[in-house]
Length: 378
Image (cartoon, rainbow, N blue to C red; front, side):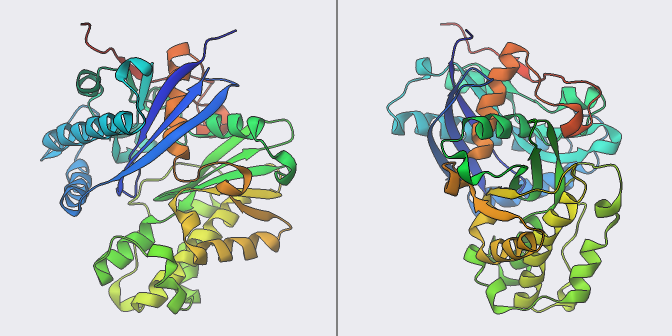
């Protein structure tokens, strides 16, 4: 029997709002024991630096390039992750010796799957030195080397969660896990547990960009702005008629693949309301490419905290005979799930187990991945 390892996962997603940290005890396969989790928000100045990093990265043609201020940003991002780990350990009365490995996602600054180019800044070797724990990082690149899209990577963890769910009575198959982060992605788990996964469209990124540009706030907390507006059918249709939704081949998205509306196209509230509808409708539209019609949608990520998105999603799913549950409804943590996944994937990487599959990223055959940074020997 394979040993269970204690792993910490670190996630800084496309919303660029902060670092999620989660602890998991796992064998990287069937055993998943979820532990504590925490979030560490970025300050406004650092979020501005991350946005500039996205702009600097647009000129990249090779993964090891660091144009503009990306080199300094990568260093400072890594140091912030190290600080988050140290605080997390202290909060939970743990020491580095208690942790076998850290799974470090880094920050995606460029994702061009059609060019087999994906860049997550984050210095794994520096992180290992700073925290005194082995680190697995850069987990997307090997998938692309073998013909995959480099995303999504979380489906293997979704499948493990579904197998181990304490209350499976509400998970009527086929089940789809939906993560609504900056970009939304879904994982289909059919009766045979065969995995199909892909990005499903814009998640929170359009709403976040819209309210930040027109209200000066980073996101629409609790959907308060959207709740005051109305859906603009023509604007919604413009997004939902995008070729991404009709192309037979599923592909992963960069946050720049969909742009927010021009300021003249909507009022603040109507724009937020319309984009919330687009987020929900995009999930159902993309689900049409699945091998079977889902019966249960399990919603994770920040988007599940927006009641407007959730109402639209529930209404649209009900029209197709499906139900919508928050992750918490079946005993999961919708905030920390991606960080938990990175802990789980780090252990899989140590064991050489597949991180991605033909049905999840389009890779030619199941492949493992990740680089391993070893902590300094004392």
